[in-house]
Length: 118
Image 1 (cartoon, rainbow, N blue to C red):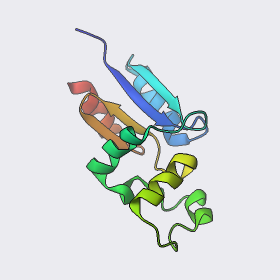
Image 2 (image 1 turned 30 degrees about the vertical axis):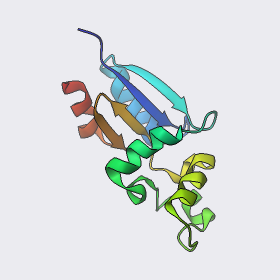
Image 3 (image 1 turned 90 degrees about the vertical axis):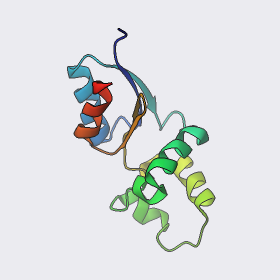
Image 4 (image 1 turned 180 degrees about the vertical axis):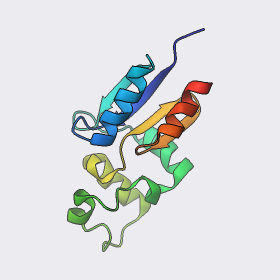
């Protein structure tokens, strides 16, 4: 049996990203971490999360970045918002985690635990 592993998209300074990292490390899960400050999330990868949760569920509507972005007031397409998110990852509820067929958004210990059941 191969050791479980997850792919995590987040920011080092995000508390929820650090919580996810701690959760998986405590359970000896290999993490492929993508720091969104250094590398934007691939469009296809982001699309997978958008398809499952819907774009609004991925946005951190309470966050300062969202407030500063004026996205709430802009008339823009989903495509436009996705472009924005790719250049400003703070707009997302991080981390985005993929383990097997399970995807999670934000701090979601129950979802992370499901990834390890596979």
